[in-house]
Image 1 (spheres, rainbow, N blue to C red):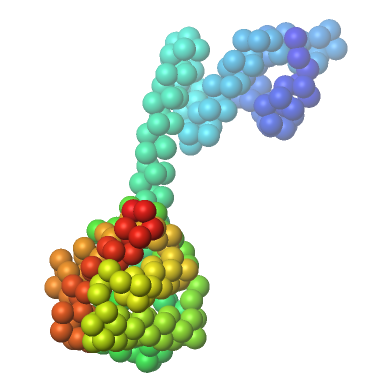
Image 2 (cartoon, rainbow, N blue to C red; image 1 turned 180 degrees about the vertical axis):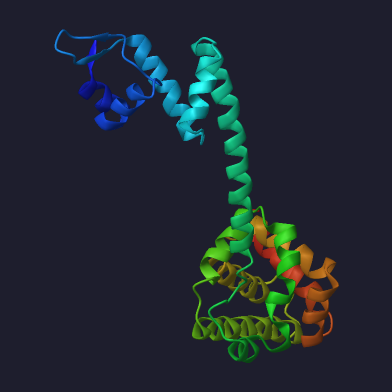
Length: 251
């Protein structure tokens, strides 16, 4: 048998709460001492557990009284509580999903003002592609890493990234103009610079992942047009250089 103080400690409730449950007939201890002190047995603890589960599920005390009065053994109540908890978990998960979608709506570079965004990106603001990017890669670790890193970038960070990107693209164009083979030292060196920039600035970019990007550069007409505008045929050249660089590194 347990005293009211012991039961209160075990259950994480107050003595006053147990007194109230007793007063309304929700949980009356099976025994009392000759001096009137409440003494709780194992059956009382089981009933208290059921009461606390139902309270956690949002049931009012009157509702709990009615539910327990309907009878049913401990297993019946546990099965009902399990079903209700699973339903609650599913509701909470839907709420979490909704909040996460709202969080993801904070697109890349949200710390920039509209004027700063235009200064950095011009008409090529990546925000315009955000819905498509989220749809295609939203479930990937690369997307999550990129979101986490870029959310904190300042205007200066983006200007530096822009300069790095333009320098790499200019190096690709210069190598192609000079007749350097796409699988040669110069072109594959630029390809490695390109991979490392992505790896450092956005997400973990293995050589295997890099070759996937290379395929996209020629498959997606927007990427192909971007590179070919710098120099005709540059998209294919960049693609071949990235592939060759991956081979050089054992991929």
